[in-house]
Length: 92
Image 1 (cartoon, one colour):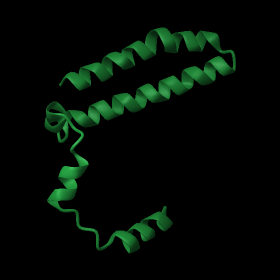
Image 2 (spheres, helix red, strand yellow):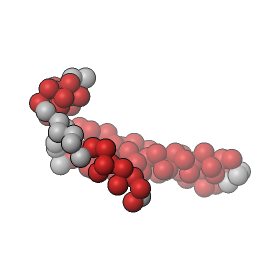
Image 3 (cartoon, helix red, strand yellow):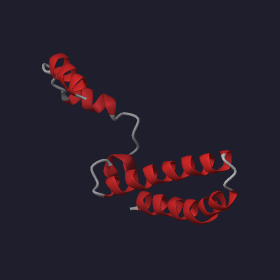
């Protein structure tokens, strides 16, 4: 980690983003996405998405090792809750 930090300090120390760069980076966002960009809800949505990805990975691993009881609990209980949580965060 220290190597990455020192490399960033060395190579990006003179980097100063300007308004053009920021606008160019955000040109693909729609109006609603612009409004949500700095919303406090974005952290909740990211957390919910990360949890969903982790559950999906666990589901695939449990199927691979033939732990079908655990896989069914994930697929029919936890993943639907996670999907609902993501949708709720996106609506706000």
